[in-house]
Image 1 (tube, rainbow, N blue to C red):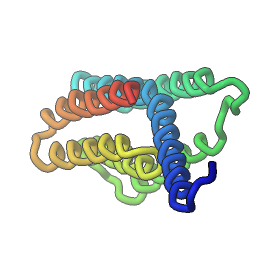
Image 2 (cartoon, rainbow, N blue to C red):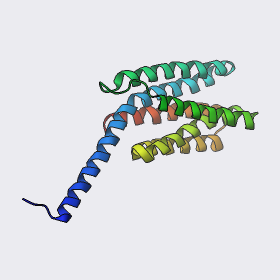
Image 3 (spheres, helix red, strand yellow):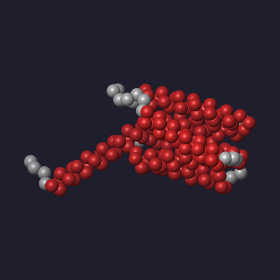
Image 4 (tube, rainbow, N blue to C red):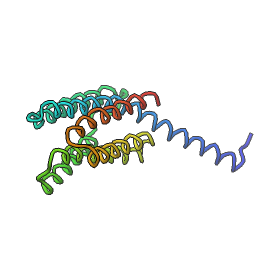
Length: 184
């Protein structure tokens, strides 16, 4: 049995489409626990800042270090057998992102609390949107939801409501997206 040129082209398109879906599904499942974890860190950071504003300079670094350690271990132990356990590319990508944020903070300081509380979510939201271009549309949805929430909260809410909104809705977006990706 021989295939026509059109049938072969159609079969190759179907294979490519299946490959893209498999790549997205794998990426979604791999990212899900990290999104849930960082949703909890996000919630804890904003609630901690709201409840203990004088200690916010300690709350965020402590939660971020704990989150980074758990995220690294999760990534290392959830990889398939035989794959690289630690990705230096991912490590240096996040290090470069943190360097970019530190550079912005150095140049444009002094900031008020709402500006700093908005900068990180905006960078994270746009990072997810960019990841979505490569890994699947669900990351784009999550990223743009974070960006929209942050801009709305910054421009429409007073500082005390800003922190609570960012804690609850930002945490819900990340945790909810993690649960959504697990089902992909």
